[in-house]
Structure formats: structure tokens, C-alpha cells
Image (cartoon, one colour):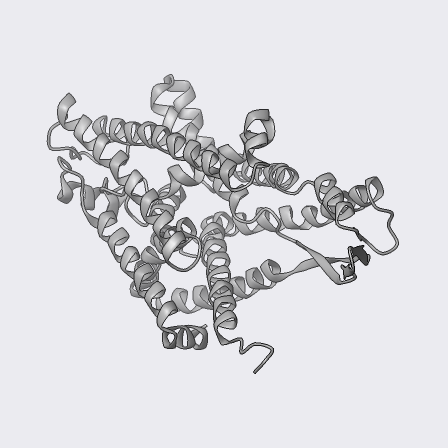
Length: 429
């Protein structure tokens, strides 16, 4: 990776893109550290430091330590990511959106605009919920100090509007990185959120127990290697294209393949499931005493067997569902037949679609189980580790490792592809 970055910095155009991306990342981190107006910074820091549990660690990890600190960019990229997932689901269920998706670039631009509107709506909902919990002393249980300096309607409204505006700015920064920088903007910002809090977690573990630090580092490296291996694994379906005579010229006749990854769904099922399981915790204060107690006992602690079972089942189910809506075997088979392509030994059309669906279902099973096992790694670690301090600072969560590895590999591949385009000397030379 260092070799690729060194080569990229030698190319003026790529160097400009990399520096532009790094500048926006620095701006993003500044917004995550800047507190919202009306927030008691001292009280927030003391209460966040005393908060323990897998749920708080997950929220801190996915938000880069910004959500529980009530910063300007407290919502981070989660509203946009959630809105994108919802729009992908609606694109299959709503005929109008499905028609827009098939219109090409123009239709995709309209879907992107709808995604922005939905992001603003989700940001208002999330910011209102977070500020309401902070106002009622339920955002950080056990914290006796008020997190807001003034709990009146106007100051609370200002905080909510600040967080919503911060989410809109984050969305704009992500689109700038995608258009003028390197890699997918939202993925880069999510990668930044996870990596930003990672050194702090490791430093706290080293201070508490050097032996635990060595053991956890070795286990983390093995986990990263396993994730890289699975993320790179794919099944290649061979495709041949028949030669066609158009006018006086011969077209086609090439050989290629359809790459089907083992983890075809990516990180989306884990993120969506984590968001779903966080909803009962947010809604618990609004329920009765018995319902709130049951939620706190069963769906808040990551070490509870019910929580683990529901977590894994939702990940597996949503992985199958997401793969089914993002990869349409019938559409792929029709496109292949339209351009004269076929799978050797399989008839074009319906048989090819059934064959692709069969192979995809066989690949999705181990891919979904892989996501479920990977998501269980931190939960099992919380149950095994007896030290509360080590539990609180356990950094190698399945979601965080998957984000780091997936985004890192994708960004390096994009840099390598651009380097190959600029280093290609051409046929005449």
C-alpha cells in the first residue's frame, strides 16, 4: 500500500486529488471534535469517560467519538448511509424509482436528489432523538450532570439545527471526495470515523494491561488477514461472446467472466442490523417501566444470548435480501443474450438466469454466515474478557474491521487503476 501511495504522489494529478481528499478528511475531523452550541463540554467528557458497555463502544466507534459528545458532526455519515440503503430497497419495491434507475445517469441523478431529501429527514429525526435523550439525562445512563447548559426550547432547537446542518455538510463533503478526490466519499469518511478512535482504544488497553495489548494485537492481525482473504474471494462465471457481423466488420468473439464475491452484500447488512437493534434502546425511555426494563436487560447488553441470536439472524436474513435486490440474475442473463454472450454449457435466457441464481444462493450462504460470525467477534470477546476496562476499550469489532479492510482495499484498487491508466504508453510506442 505504501508503494502505491508513493507512486501516486509522483503523479501531479493524483497528488492533487490525494491532498484534496486529505484536506476534506481533516475538515471532517475538525467538525467531529467541535462541540455544538449550548453543550457542556466538561460534563460530556466526564460522562463519556465513565460510560461502559458494548452499545456505547459501538456508537462511539461508528461515529468517530462524535455522537455521544454532541459535536457539530455528531450524526456523521449514518443518515446518508441509512438513506442510501432505504432508497436501494425502495428502488425495487416502488415502480417509479425502478424506472428511474433504468434511465441511466439522468434517473440516477433524481434518485440521488431523493436520497439527499431523505438524509435531511433522517438527520432531523436522529438529532431530535439524541438531544431529547441528552435533555432527559438518558443519553449517558449514570451521568448526574446536565449535558446541556440551557434546556429551554430555543437552545435545544439550535442544537438540533446545528447537528442537521452538520449532517448536510458531511453529505456535501462526501460528494466532493467522490467527484474531485480518490475513492467513494462516504466510504472514506466512514473509514475516517473508525480509524480516528482506533489508536485511543489501543493506547488505553496498553496502559491497563500490556499482555492484553499483545494478545489483542495478534488476534486483531489474524482477524484482519481472514477478512482480507474472504473479501478478495470470488467465483468467476466464464462468459463467451459470439462473433457478429455488423456491416463489413466483425464484432465480439471475446472471453470474459462475471465476478461473484463471496461477500456480495458487503458491510450493508451489519450496519443496517446495528441500526435496527439500536432503535429499541432509543425507544426504551418512551415505553413503560416493564418494557424498558426488558429492553435494557435483553437488547442493550451485547453479551445477552437473545441479543446475539437476533443480531446474527437479522444479518443473515438481510444479507440474502440485499443480495437479491442488488443482483438480478434475470436482468444479467437478458443483457448477456442481447449482446451475444453465453455461459459455456448453459443455454441463454432462462437457463442462464436459473444457473446464476443457483450459484449466487450457494455463495450467499457462506457470505452471510461470515458476516454473522464477524459481527459476533466483539460480543464473544465481551463475554470472555472479565476486565470491564478491557471490554470498554475492545477495538476489534467485526463492523470496524470490515469497514477498514473493505474501504482500504477498494481505495487502493482505485488508485492502482488510475496509475495504470496514466502509465500506459500506448500501442504506437
